[in-house]
Image (tube, rainbow over all chains, first blue to last red; front, top):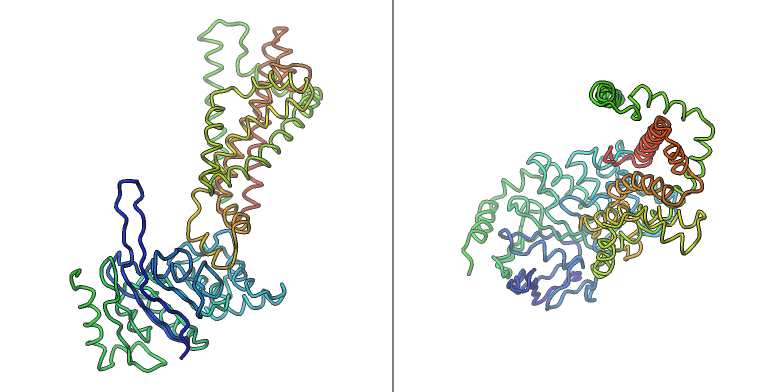
Amino acid sequence: MTEILRIHNLHKVFPGKRRRDRPVVAIGDVDLDVSAGEFISIVGPSGCGKSTLLYIIGGFLKSSSGVVEFNGAPITGPAPARGIVFQAYGLFPWKTVLGNVEAGVATRGLPRAARRQEARRFLDIVGLSDVERLYPSALSGGMQQRVAIARTLAQDPELLLMDEPFGALDAQTRAQLQTELLDIWELSHKTVVFVTHSVEEAIFLSDRVIVLGHRPSIVREVIHIPVPRPRLRETVLEHPEYPALNRRVWDLLEAPAC
Amino acid sequence: MLTLDRRQVVLGLLGVAVLGVIWQLATTHVTRMTTFPNTLEAGGAALAQLVDPEFWRQLRVSGFRWACGLGLAVGIGVPIGLVMGRHRRVHAVVDPLLTAMYPIPKASLILLFVLLWGAGNGARIVAIATGAIIPVIVSSYHGAAGVEERLLWSGRSLGWRAGRSMLSVVFPAALPQILNGIRIAISISIFVLVGSELLVRGSGIGNYLFNFYDVGQNSKVWGTALALAIVGWLLDSAYVAVVRLATPWMDGQV
């Protein structure tokens, strides 16, 4: 298995806003290796730096110290190869649904006619072909997130970063999109790093669950999810190890700061 | 959407009508100023102006100056404001200059510019531009400064560097504010235009209006002023209509 992402001794400090404020250590010391084709989740208590970690992998923030390498090379900034899906505000409100997805396709350098066709293909994958002419503000939250996923997939990234993409949605839409995400993922088997607050979501979706501790965060534990794929919600919930896994992650999250 | 507009038009006319009634009553029953026209006289004079070819001839002369001044203000002001919004150092340099200019009546700058460039259109256009550029810069600045970070990051994730981000993310994201700023600039620039044509006469609608004042034809002064106000209102309405057509995603934010 090729290692696509290598993080070693990652440390991130944010300086205080005003001169007399203390600096905030967002990430203490994190090690993480991700192999190609893996689906991993990062969970942790609020404020533990899981989104910060994702943004560093994405190249939007710089690490304070430590090694962050993508395909063997240090990450210096954002790139289409590491696509990101935000929880909200990721779509361009002035572009139509199709226009947004086309922006993703455009990173691949195809001629204009092929670009439109490709964009339609990705919209079809997320089941939103009939709304291509609408603007994002006309869509529901769930539909907007589907478009965001379509746009990022259209970039054909090697690494898919997801920052609590379903966090702002109601429980049913959330469950639906989780299943859809897995269906899409099964087609392409991209490497996914998924940040979430939801333990159930993390266990359902991932091969491994990375549990971070309180700020300044370290990796408390890496939990392997032995449920075979493709996964149905019932097979996960009814798997004999599920209760123990669920319990283990919650215990780690609720443990007091060291 | 259309029915709402009709109701708004009716309410708007109602407001104007109430003002007209108050004005009429005030001039006929409260004061005894014979030189101040009542609503009916002023309204009649306004209509007389609107059908007078001389009014439109002078309006064309002024209109040219106004359009050039506004165009200059938008063309220069929007980029300055956008860059100010994304680069703190630029903001730090330009902002004191702007605030220093606030209290200066821009129309009076025409006197200075005339010394530099003579009484032709050039000086007038620059005076109008100076007045119009401030709301344009300020609104563009706020629009650019308030762009959602995740939109910028989305652009960078698509491989867009600073220049491309400015055009493809900052500018469209700031557009509601920019367009609102331009709307304000339209009104301010008309104000500066008429004011500058009082101070430096010769030609134009301001000069035309003040000629009536000089000879004491007060109803014609008010008539011209009202006619100008109507033209200004039509311009503003046309601007809003064009903006709404051109920016369907903004859903009536302007």
